[in-house]
Amino acid sequence: MAEPARLPPVDPERRSRLLGAKLAALVRDHTGIAGGEPLPFPGGAALVRPDGAWVLVEDHPDRAVAAALAWADRRGASPVHVLVEGDDGVPARHAAWFTEPPLVWRVDGRALHPGRAALLPEPPPVDPGLAELRPLIVEGGADPVEEHGVLAGEVLGLEVCRAVRDPVSGKPRLEVGVGAHDREAFQLLHGDVPAVDALAGVVERVVAVRSDADSRHPLRRLAAERLLRWQLVQQPEAIGLAALAPTVPPTPRSNLKDPVPCAAVGAVRDGRQVVAAIATGIDVRVVPYAADALAAHGGGEGVRLLVIVPERDAHPALARLAGRLAHPAEVVPVAF
Image: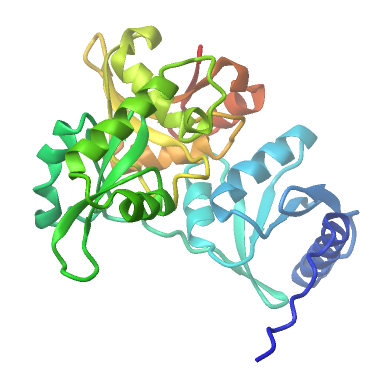
């Protein structure tokens, strides 16, 4: 049987022009007024008109609102309209955290409908059978971490094992490795090695790489935001805190490969509670992520909300965006 024909990838420049034309048509049909020259926007297109900035986002809806606000801020355009292809729930929720929330629209054919904010997911508990593997994770030298029903073991912020049920027997077992593919390969190659011994060997190698600030090894770059969190948990005084601890993220992460902010909770020396969102790279998504994290922990007027990034990533746009939250966040640059 012949394989189905594969369409060649669309040239980025051509795709940008197509998205620009699509945005112009959507805005014209919605407002009844034509005008505005489409401008480039990462993963979409944008327009600046007398009635505000209009931004069409096709990729990464979790970044849509923050990216659109930062883009419009540089051009002094308001109000901001964010047109989303697909999931409008997360962008609509993110928009609601700001003092002057952008208007989120869901694209439905050639029509625009107001976005409906999605609730934050309620983290499910870890399977009790899998939870019994916690001592094994500790014995192997990793830190047990529970997030959205998943029990894993981390070393300096990098996941190196995960508790799973055997697909055949259904019995709980510990898979060792960094990411799903690595765990599968490790199981095939070292299936006869006791889990705790296998884990201890991986932990030793990962510690050697992750603790070397000059290392350019991929294991050093993976989950860099969690490595930064691990460092701050060890030395919270470096950012003026009395204590800091990892906490469940407001939303589950989809994989280990893509960078995504992480969350932490702590306290200032005077006892005030702290909620922090930690990111690496210039990633404006961390600002609404911080608001999500605050909401996931019950909010509170007296809570200090922090956005923690490496010094090199503390872009002025990040501080401006953080200050526009209804519960403003402080951007804290740290050496990393």
